[in-house]
Image 1: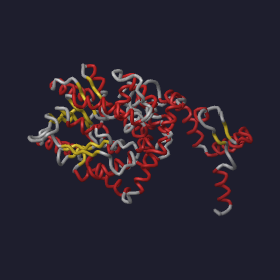
Image 2: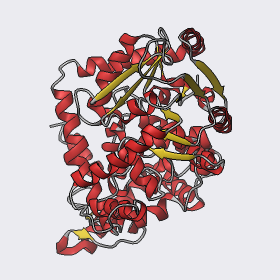
Image 3: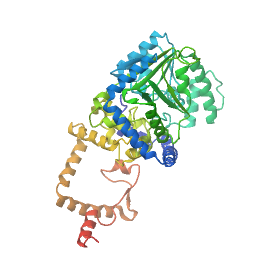
Image 4: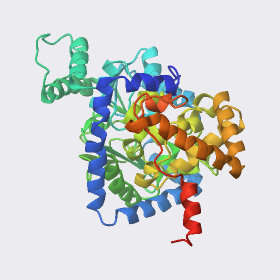
Length: 475
């Protein structure tokens, strides 16, 4: 995890004032959200599959050590090597050692959130290796020296002009006057540059969407094919995966794949779904001579058996992010964690500590849309609430917030006082709003009114209406 450049609150102000970012985020509703809705509706058994996938992952987590041992034995049986990394530093050291033994100079990388989590690129570059991201979105943000702002669409915060500017600044060997106004031109240029890197790479590093215990295989899904080129062309292939990526069988992996694409991009299936087992065999034309899998814990074992274990069912589809109104307003960089949105608000404090990341669970409206669309039925609001409770218990919550909650608790425990204040305050607010019926600025609510109007109260309070309802005999 990287250190935070300011708090979520200060980052939010900058995000809301960024017109390019706001234009990009507006496309979430017409893009990911709409496509996911259509894809789910076109599969009548979609909800039944969600139940099956939830139960399958829960079963694996309940016996994870056994499945990990089975997986390791199958990988070794197929000619691969398994490396166990308890911490992020362990994983970095293992990858560095493999690259050094291979006398590597150039490393091609597929998109991997685990590599972001352990800050692998920076570590390898510090030790003299050239590292090139081969996913187009990751390649763009690498050129701009930025972290991803989304776990499946890392460059979603950028527009075409910004991408063209990055290409012209970094691809100086090409004609400076070349037109890059159209997406096709950008794609063709990236493809030409990256093909050279694929062919020259000594080591390929990818993530894994799923690890299959029964065969020692890993499953990789992409829409660009860069994952296949990254794992088959270099002579050494390294898979980075966290321990909870295990599924028991190929059939179980197929179940998860059916949910993944529909939940992520609204596709029935991604363009490339590749199942790989071991290194190149005798007679194979393609494939690596060495095949390594680095299994990372980095705090996940500590989540087992506790209130946050359900988070380990996550398949990184980003459905919760795509449907989150908070993410939709501020984007991923405002969270300052590589894992953003609702899933990041649960996972980041678990992996990197609540003391440094207590703000993340607060970045939620608790509308419940994240849980509603999660293909693995992860109770994200419940877990964010649990983090909030822990932050309050440990006095991590800011003093002003704690004081406000204390006042609220005092009033809420005294119904007569609560009713008196409500009966006084609601008509007063309606009077202050006047004919407009809305507040463009309201003391103690500037965080809301700075970016939107606050409607004034209308009519009687709920309690007054409820009293009238009871007096009328419930009619």
